[in-house]
Length: 528
Image (cartoon, rainbow, N blue to C red; front, side, top):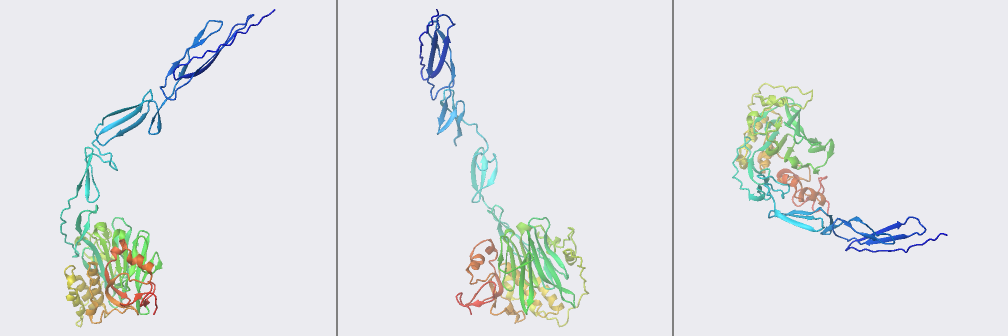
C-alpha cells in the first residue's frame, strides 16, 4: 500500500527598508513514500530616488528540511533634478562663470545629490564675451566714432580723436572735397575725377590736361585698369565739318555690371531730342532701377550710379564724367587719362606706356573697330583775319566770375577760339561756354550765361515749355507716383541729383501733365 503525504505550503515575507524585491523559490524533496513541497515569496519595494548600488537580501526557506538562505543582488537607478531637467548620476548639471572671474560647477554624485563647487577661474587674457570674441591686444572700430581695445580680458572703448584734415591741391584745379574715411568717422580731403569733352572735340582729362583730338570712330573714354566695378564709358565721334575733317561727339555709351546705357541726341523735325536705351531697349526718362537712374532736362541727359558715386552727362556736343577718387583713384585709363592727381601720366597708352602726345594716345583707345583709321592730321590752318572770338571772351568775363575762383577757364577759352576760327558753324562757340558752365555746375555753381550771348546761344524749347537756366534735374508732374519715386523720396539717387541745371520746363504757374508728354496744365484737375 502506498501512502502520500503533502506537507503544508509555508510563506515567509522579509522586508528591508525602502526596498522591495519579489522572489519565488520552490524546493522539492526526493520522491519517497512521503512527498513534501515548500514555496517562499519575498517582495522588496525599490525607492524612486537613491544610490545606484547592489543589495543582498537573505531569504529563509523553512519546512521539514533544514532552512536554506539565498543572497539576491539588485541594481538601483536614481537621478538628480535641476531647473526641471533630469540628470543621471555622475553627470555635469551646470558649468557657469560670472563676470567677477568665478567658476561654478554642479554635478550629480553617486547618491544623486547635486554637489556645487566654485573657485576662482583661470584668467584668460582674451575677451571671449565679445561678439565676435577678441584676442588680447586687439583693437576694432566701435559705434559712434569709438575704438574698442581688449586688454587682459577687459574691453574698453575710447572716442576717436580726429586730426585736422590736411588741405589738398588738385591738379585739375577743381576744389578738393571733404569726405569721410572708410569707417565713416574722420574726414579727409580728396580730389574729384572730372573729365570733359566738347566741340570738335576738345578734352580735359581727369587731372586737367587739355588736348584736341579729331577722330571719326568709337573710343574708350574710361576703362578700369584692374576690373572692380565692370564700369566703362565709350564715345562715338562723327565728322561734323567735312571741310576741315573735324569731328564731334554723337553718342555716349556707359557699361556698368550687365547694363549697357546708350545716350544720344537727334534732330527730330527741327527739335533736338534726347534718346536713351538700356540693353538696346528704348526707355523714357526719368528711368530708374536698383542700380542707376537716368533723367533729362530736355537739354542735358544725366546718368547717376549711386553705389560707385558716378555721374555721366551728355548733351549732344558735350559730355562730362564725374567719378570719386576713393573708388577710381589710380585705376582709370582711356582718353580721359589716369585719375591720380598727376598730369604726367595722362597720355597713357593701352600698353601702359606714356605717350608724349595725348592726341596720338587718344587714337589708340579706339574700341576695336577695324574701320578706325588714324585721323588725318591737317596742316596747320592759319587763323582767318576775320575770325571773331568775341563770344569766347564771355568765359573770361564777369558772367563766370564766381566760377573763376574755383575752376581754371583757360582750356575752355582755347577750345572756343579754335572752334570759332576753324569750324563753319556760327554757333559752335556756344559749346565751349556750355561746357564751362557744366563744369561750374559740377562744382555747385549754376551760371545763367546764355543771355550774355545776345541771342547767339539762345535755346528754343518746344512749346509750351520754356528755357530756365537753373532748375531741378527732374520736373514735378501731375503723376503723384512719379513725384514720390523721383522727387519726394530722399534716397541715394536724390542725393546725387540735387543740382541745378539748365533745361526746358513748364512756365511758372503751370505743371507738367506727365513725364511722357510736353503738355503743361494750369493745375492737375484741368487740361488746356
